[in-house]
Length: 89
Image (cartoon, rainbow, N blue to C red; front, side, top):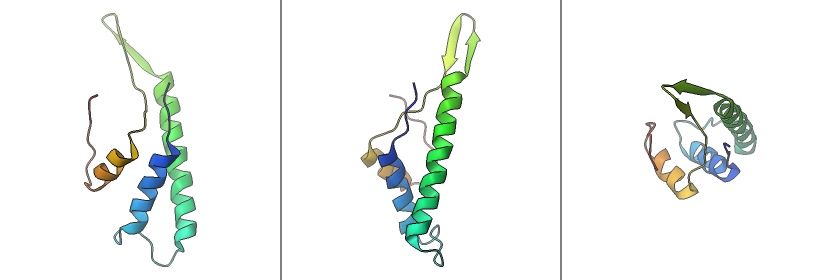
């Protein structure tokens, strides 16, 4: 079953607020923080629900996806790069 981490979302949102290219200067950070947090959580929870209920069967094998939070330290390091990385565990 997929999981969404509030701690990882907080780390992501804080990184957005620290980045002058992504922070909206005329919106108070407290409001911007709430909006980004709510949207990010809703997006990840929706994605997690979809992944939990979708699978494909191919040649007798079931392929499915799950959403799992990374440790916050890993999240902060990955936010330093503007690319999406697929990490196998």
